[in-house]
Structures are given as C-alpha cells and as structure tokens.
Image (cartoon, rainbow over the protein chains, first blue to last red):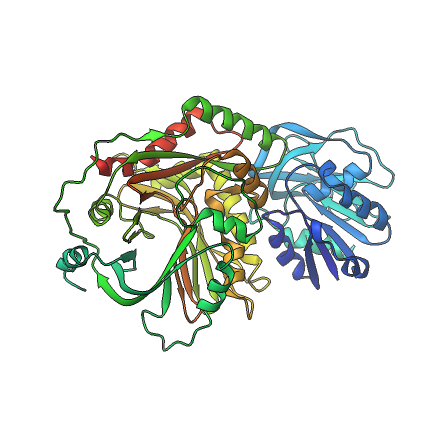
Length: 185
Length: 387
C-alpha cells in the first residue's frame, strides 16, 4: 500500500490519482496520520504543500523513523522535507516559479534515467535547495535546464526519491512514466 | 417561452422570485413553499436531506438559493474571526412551486425612479491595498501561498428595483451564470460568468475562468488567445487553477477519470473574452451531496492557491464579512443533481445598502496599482447601473 501524507495542499489529490495507477493508495492529512496505515505501508509519499519543511516537525520525525525501512518519495515540499532532514538548507529563490512550465535535464548521477534526457515539467515552488549539498547516498539527479536548480534526488541504497517539480501536474509531460520508474526501482 | 409582460406581473405581485440563466434563456422560479435560512448547525442536514427526497422528477423538485462565503469556510473547518458588516444571513434556499421559461430578452422598466445619487465608497484605499498586497507578496516568497485574491468592497446607500437592474445588466453583459433573487427584505443581482459545479448523475464538471480581456475593435478572438498565451502571468495563474480544480474533483471522482475537456480556450461574451478551461470526472459511487460541496466550495479560482492556507491568510486579514461574495448560488435537485456558480460580479442590496465586492489576484509578478485599478474596472460595470 502507498501511504500519501497530505500537507493540506490543493494538488494532493492529483498525486493520489497518479499513484493509484500503480497500486492501492491511502491518503491522510498530516494532522491526522493513521499509525496503522503508516506502519503497514510499503511506500510513503510526502505531498506538496504550503510553507517550508521546518513548519512540519512531525513529518521530519516520521521521515527519520522510516528512512531505510520503506521507500520514501517526496514531491515539491516533500522533496524539500527529505533534503531538510538530510541537513540541506532550503532557501527562498529570487525568481519564483508558480504554474510555470520549464525544461529540466537528467544529470550524470542518475541510475534510473538516461543522462542528458530532457523533460517538460510543471513547477510550483517558492523555495529551493541551497547548494553545494552533500549527504551520504544522495545524488541530485535532475536540474533546471536554465538555472541549474536541483529538481530531483535519488538515494538508490535506501530507496528515497524526490521531485521538486510536480509529476502529477497537467503541465508535466510523461509524469506517469517518472512515477512508474521510481515505484519499480 | 412566457411573454415578457410576465415580468411586470411578477414585479407587481410582490412575490419573492429568482431568475437564473438557462441554456436558451432564463428560468424564473417563484411561489416558494419553503424558505430555509442556513446556519452552521443546520447546513449539513439541509444538504444531505434535500437530495434524499422522493421525487417524481418534477421541474420544481429542487432547492434553489445560495451559500455565503463564511458558511462554506465553516463547512471545511476553516475558521473566521469576528468580522464587521451587514448582519446578512449566511445562506438561504427556497423550494419553488412554479418554474417559468423566459427568453434571453428580458424587458422590464421600473415605474418609479429609484436611481440613487449616493456615491460609492470603497473600503480600502490604494495605500492600504498596497500594504496588504506587499504583505501577501512576502507570503508568496516564503511559499505559504502561490496566488491570493485581495477583495475590495464598494458600498452606497440605496434602495433598488432589482428586476430593473438585472434586466439592464443582462443587456450590457449576458453572463452564463447570471442570476437574481428578489425577496421581501433583500435582493441579489449577479452577472457571474463562472460555473463551479455541474452534476448530472455520476458526471461532474467545473469550468474555471482565469484571465479576462475587455473586447475592443482591434481585438478579435484569435488575438485574445494569443494575448493570453503570450502573457506569462495570466498563463501561470490559469495553470495553477487548472491543477487545483483537477485536485478538488479528484477528491470525489474515480481514480483516473478526471480529464481536462477544454484546455485553456477563449470564450467570447458581449463585452469580454474569458480564458477558460473545462474539467470533468466520473463521481465515485455513493458520493454524497455534502462531500461534493465540501470538495469544491468555496470555488478555488476566486480564492487563490493552495486553498486552505490561502483562506487562512485572507481570513486573518479581512475585517469585513464577505457575505455572498465568493460563495455559490445554484440548485440542488431532489435526485441529487446540482448546478452551482461562483458568486462574483454581484450586488447585494440589504437594509437600503448596496454592496459590490471585487477581487483580483496577487501573484509574484503582479503589480499593486494595476490590480487595484483592475478591481475598480470590475466594480464599475455594476456601479454604472446606478446612474
């Protein structure tokens, strides 16, 4: 079962429908997490949402508890939450992308996607990862083709994945394929 | 179609009545056998019970009326602090016993001259609008909201003949979700263009608008489309609303059934072009009317995104009750079908006061003066009716 934690976002149910293509999905609000479902789940998905990772201490605790035990996937805020728990700094960016379609490219660190491959994706983020960023087993595997901002992470050892952009957005081409790949990784 | 002198009769009869835009013209509802004033306590029962009634599918087997902004917030557990404003009901629904079809040409002129000389006052001046705008821009930078709509209110003292106003409004602006309510102690007139819920059996759709252009001689439909496509700000706002409405529908629809039927097209109205999308899905079995309303209301396109955190930001900021503004008007049929709009471009007349609310969006690259003036332009079409 895939357990999606919703950060009160207005895109979460697009994520739910997207993941439902590949398995049974349960979704609860972060204020209302069901311990049984959480324990039973094989995959944990941290949804997009408003604010910054530091606003959600409970999610940081859950991440640390289940890291290495379950596959964890973060989208937008969820992506930042993973990085934040790995001691990454999440900062405001000068140019803000909300409802913006842009091109991203796969870096040579990716094991799942072909190096240099480009994707057209939808972005909704005020914040970004401050670099350089180093954490054991973590690689930044996609970047904005123009600004080089971190757009995806892979930790293939502990099965942790994340996207700064929104694979579930109608602005993202081949979003389903991206999710399928990380779910079968 | 009923002859137009029917309007004269109904006005003379002093019976409460409602007019709502239909496909081919307008529908008039009257002879109300029930009037339900909604409160935070009775709303859930009202919604659930009204669509569980036995029906012979008569045309009048429905409740028609409106939900105000505050009651819709309460329904999804978003709190609003005590606010100032008219003590206007949070929502009212009527059970009609008569429905008449009217043509698109509504002709009625008030016999009295009720035009008001009282000028309109705006509740926010440019300076305070700017300061709110800048405050919200910081919230966009920190990621608490991606888009937020700031509301301003125009008010005057006036007694109006609602039917006369509505007839003139439909001549200057024929809107697909236009409606009016005329009751003994209040009236509402609206040229809303926006449908929030159309539900027939297990099919549900929503048709958000984000992007409006005033028509001119130089601007045809295809030029309007290329304007919207080239305008990055309008495009981003629209994209955000499309993804938000997809998500709202996904809460109540079968997985994989939510589709964008019309993606970012231009629709032409008498004076305006709108940038519109149509999104639809197949409802999950046994979805209740209450679940549908909670998933979709208040309509996202007039609030901002993400909905909950943006509502909280707005509610902490606004000192005055929005009343009907950004609530929804429409009907719930006994068989569970429904149609609701978003109440914008509206006049609420209550206790000899008229209230016109308008809002425009702050996104990261919008400009405070431009948006403030935009609000005035939106209100002006309604204010002009008083002249």
